[in-house]
Length: 407
Image (cartoon, rainbow, N blue to C red; front, side, top):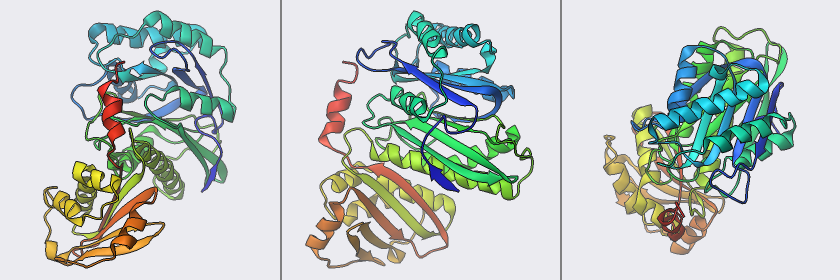
């Protein structure tokens, strides 16, 4: 596997475009379009929030139907959540605009939205946006990058990545883009992400791989504890790499899953680091836990604690906050087995050893915690399971951003 330049247009047969539709924002692109020259098998995972946006329900039907997917249209600014029948009508109107412009079945067109909840989408602007983007679809890397910027809301940077790997003696490409900065909390998936690959693979195996990889990537990030109404991950595979169809688990499937894990973890970490108001990436790595689920629970509790996040922001090596979060996480463990360290590019420092605090150099701890990425490393000494979770620090700017989000 090798990382290459690009995102959703890196794989053969995929094109993208974007435009200024003025759906909510008046000074930037706010619609994106990803299209495959050939129909794709597709897989998806969606928010666990009971209140699901209209676009989430639309996409769930497409994924569950087993029918091909060939395009996805995304808008930013308005979430199309809590919008009743009018929200579903907006999804259908968008998909039918693609059908009219490109001749593909509207039932093969996914839609996604991100932004303010409870506002109705201006359908006329959506349709006009589709018409404009249909004429400018482009398979260049730049077109994919532009699409990744058009789906941003409070994100400060766009997020895209692409890799190559081998399957059946053919070079295969997997690319992706995502957006996410606020309303980020584990339980799949707390963001929008779109993956494209020219791999030929059976739908059932694609869905299995996506569902498995999500558990240790997108489901292991948190910014603010709020699980969005719009979380969507879609993966489209058009088979244009020319490999023999992956229909069984084996070397080709494993190579794909490795690439998928890399891409999803890369995008997940980018989102965690770009949390609203964040100044640094906050990672929790738990090793030697009793079981995998305990490791996941413990690491997510650490990065999800507001007190822990505030300590990371303040560069305060207050290890008690992290132990406290572990203690109420729901995982069962003996505190007398725990070893806790702070780690960054500036070094690693143990501060708690098997039930007893360690007298440590505060200046050394401060140096470690001032880094742009800080890890709380925990050895449970109770098993052989491990997991890593990602989040960010909690700053004053988070409140400022969310206090006037509708403005």
